[in-house]
Amino acid sequence: MNVLLMLVLAAPPAVKPTPTPVPIATPTVVLLPSSQRSAPAAGGLADLARGIKLRLPAGDSRVITNERVKELSRGVELTTSVPGPPEQAEAGRVEQATREEGEKQQYWVERYQEARREVEDLQAEVARLEEETARLERDFYSRDDPAYRDGVIKPAWDQALEDLRANREKLEEARSAPDRVKDEALRDGALPGWFRGLPEPSAPKAEATPSGGG
Image 1 (cartoon, rainbow, N blue to C red):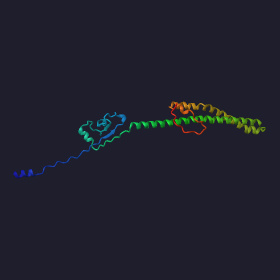
Image 2 (image 1 turned 120 degrees about the vertical axis):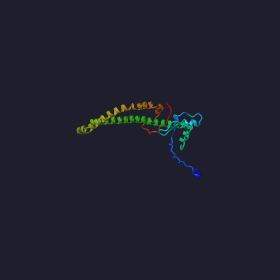
Image 3 (image 1 turned 45 degrees about the vertical axis):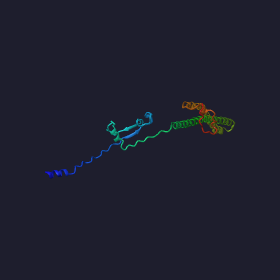
Image 4 (image 1 turned 135 degrees about the vertical axis):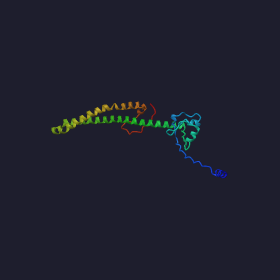
C-alpha cells in the first residue's frame, strides 16, 4: 500500500490542454465629418471620442465595458487629421468665389457681345442687299435685250428682294437680343457694370476681367 501511494505522489501532474484562441473581430473606426459632430471644448480624449463612430461586427454586443474596450482596441490604430487654420480656409473660399465670378462675367459678356455682333452683321447685310436690289433695278430698266433682262436680271433681282426681306426680319428680331441677354445675366447674378464701356463687337475682343462694380 505504501509503495502504491508513493507511485501516485511521484506521478507528474496532468497538463491541461491549451485552449484554442478565438479570433476577435476588429471593429471599424469611423471619424465623423466635422459637420456631424460638435466642436470639442477641451480637446481631450472624451471630446475626440464624440467624433468617433464604432461599427461593431454583426451580432456583437452593444454593451461596452472596460474589458470589452480592451478587446476591441487590439489591432486598432486611430488616426485623425488636423484642419488647416480658419484664415487659410477662408482665403481659399474667397479665391474660389472670385474665380467663379470671373468665369461668369466672361461667359455673359461674350454672349452679350455675340448678340451685338449679330446685329452689326445683319445691318451690314441689309445695307448690301439694298444696294444690290437698287443696282439690279437700274440694270433691269436700262437693258434693251428683253431675253437677258427677263432671263438673267429679273431672277437675280427677285432673289435679292427676297433675301433683303428675310434679313430685315432677322435684324428686327436681333436688335432686342442684347437686352434679352443682359436681363438673363442679371437674373443669374451678373453686375450691370459688366456691360458698360465694352468695345464695339467688330473690334478685337479683350479678355473680360471682373469689374466688381454695378
